[in-house]
Length: 182
Image (cartoon, rainbow, N blue to C red; front, side):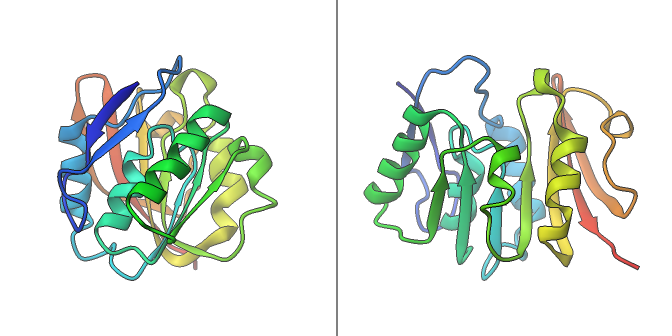
């Protein structure tokens, strides 16, 4: 069993445990800290969608910082169970776990979201497909965090997603986009 710590908010320093699953790579601490510095005033009171939850670090960090709801999508059954266990340990009923692939969850996800975490397993190259599937589930000015191992221009993201901030840590390229609908 692997673990990491929540960086800030109500659950600061609380440990998140996650399964050892091939391809599961939590967002590095440095990148997570940068992301939540960018989002400092944009998490509280928001509805969050963590498309490829993995360890749950991003979605749980958002809940710790005041998000009012987070849907976490995780296809691995053991990790989905672990995420539910973590929410129980944190005594939170603000999270919903869907044990499905992000593609199959699209028809099950309810409501609109103000913040989307899009960091699929790099080898699956799902950025364009998932962006297309979920764009209509985002509020007009939603923020979208994208993490990849290649340049954003190569991902096939919607043209109306405007890059606001970006960083690089090793091979990880991370950016914060805003959904602009004309």
